[in-house]
Length: 333
Ligand SMILES: [Zn+2]
Image (cartoon, rainbow, N blue to C red):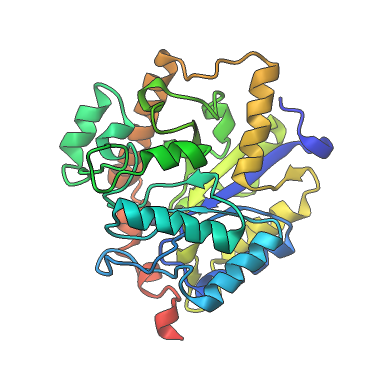
């Protein structure tokens, strides 16, 4: 059991992938989170989307959206990076993008999350795994490759800046609200990625509101509280407004969490700083042990397979649904 600050009993936070987030569909969600004192981490793009057939969403280049991002940051939300933009960016653009981030938001991001098929992704695709899982991923997702953010010879290289500025990166996903129970080593270092990355964390797999409902309900929240655990949920809040209405289950759960005084609701970097401190005082290995890494790699891959082929709730299925078609975005405004 953790000794959380202010006698809190459990922690819950979200890392929000910025895909599909526009001012119009995301501000109501952050208003709801703020009303319930749940301060999460939002990722952003600095530049407008370049691969419009694949991705969409606002970037810091839209003045009103930037203003909103600055507002929530002042209110205690963390702003982090989802690459400098969606699509192909070269080193000089990435350097400029990081500087724009710093000038608009007062400091460099501490968290970066790889976006989809961006060539500047760091240790992405099958490189997320070690043998033999890397070969399985290569076979299963043959076009999920060609990432070179950590390769010095690449025009997309920015691994040195990633190492310098980014404290926390995300890798393995777990199929449980209690992320820390499934990965007690986070944040951890990993020798495979040490050259251009620092600490890594896991997240609870919940890419959309269907998965959110599967992972987060009154029973699972109560269990998280009883287990004294930490939930780091990864999702796309940009999907959660459909026909101008916030997903009702999400709204209910945020209000349920908000009603609990025992919950510690701070951004992911604050949670990970706390866990790191806790690891040090308990002499827990800074590096992820090899046997555990294999185990969590297996579990992570299995989670992906489970929600793709057996319990069909992942984004592959969600994006073919009515909910996704009817989601609110700025095009409708
Ligand atoms: Zn993304």
